[in-house]
Image (cartoon, rainbow, N blue to C red):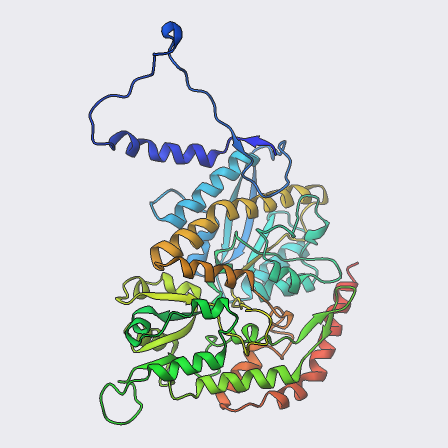
Length: 498
């Protein structure tokens, strides 16, 4: 293995130097050891470390001081995923700053970001303008997953698999997205550790540890590891937690429940069940093209189990919005709930008086082979505009690969290990659960093409829950022809690019 010195190591030492000089409880000066033969002072020697990079990029990379220009469509805090101005002491901010400094030193290049503000489609509209006009102003594009997938379908992005230095099989790329987004052996969008949204938009279960201790119920960690964390098991737990707090003999907002949620089509909070219950509508043929693949029995059985949980005696359903759900959870009026991972970063959760843990969302039954995780469609993905010069595409691909790799080394630990498992969540079991959650990410292609394919979590699952009855079979039957025709349309569009 090659040996390298890394800027991140030097930076860390420089940051630690003042505190190292001031600690130790002594005013004695540290002097060089001169006890060796000949009374010769021992001099410092350079220490090299094993290659810290997971990528296979060559040592000779040099982009000659160029600027990599990113065009992004962002929402609020997401803009700070790309470039920050200085170190502030915030663990994630400083990790992003360090990553970019490392990239600049390694590649002799820096990245700038041009944000696009507006609705979900504003970024891809601007990308289309760039590509159609032949502009070379931008080297990379980043926006939410389902809009950017459509940009690939429209021919506005380069095939990442065609680039010399991009290796999407590496661990720093999200393999769950690769499985859904690749088509005909080509792939036009990718994500992974360089997108904090990849982690933040994952759907998870949260449980109130104090309530579990008070009730004498073991934390469900071992249940998860044993493969027995299912909807029916969670329903049994929820019923055990119910308490009629006000003693009026009625289930109302003043009572304590085991689980809290909403059954409505105006919330995305339950979309994660599309993955966790193994609802798959599209698979691949032997040539890596999409095929219609709906297991009606699986949908019917999974939704039956979901309705048992949501209509169970231990489940609260009186919330008018998602904020009410988390308010009940934070106040100790519900032992469990489902959430996007980013909610644990909010002030309400950081100031929560109760300790809580993180779990994967439950399976439909023990027969389901694994836990599957859902990433909300707003997580960010990357692509390279089709208009970049042919002779420059590999250089941009080189930067993108190093960007992903360095994010895995620097930014992921800051968010995943430090921020989540230390600052926000205080037990290592939750860290193990996060491994299961991230490794089990599954994205059905129907959720990448939301505006084209009607059979997806947004349209089917939300409507079933709003109706509070299992209408999955009729919804599957009514959408089958439309979905099959759209799949043919998508496949044909990509085949025409060959």
